[in-house]
Length: 117
Image (cartoon, rainbow, N blue to C red; front, side, top):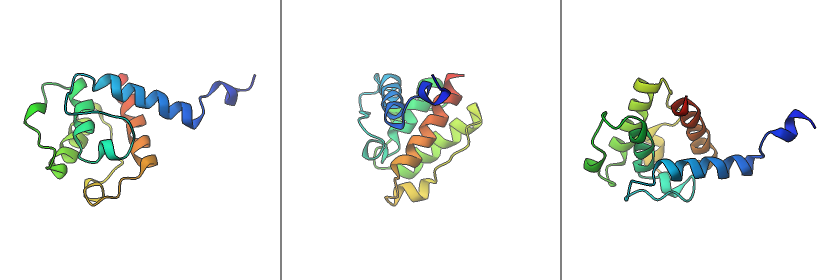
């Protein structure tokens, strides 16, 4: 058995990461995660994931789905300050519709590793 056969495929990794995102955000009624694109488009999913690990950093219930810039900036700032996870995504690009599935996946994978440790 080779080491590559022990690693999950990209599809399996996506499925596992999606399940982690769903598990971490299950108590956030306004967040439903089914994909790595549209469900992250307003920034609330990122905020919910970060808030799950750092609940005292901000009041999630005061966030506004329409204030994407604030949501992205908040999630990325808290993840960087509290877990040293550098933002791999640019909030300006995200709010203007440049939400790349692979980029979101990569950032979430970084969050997963950084927040679980």
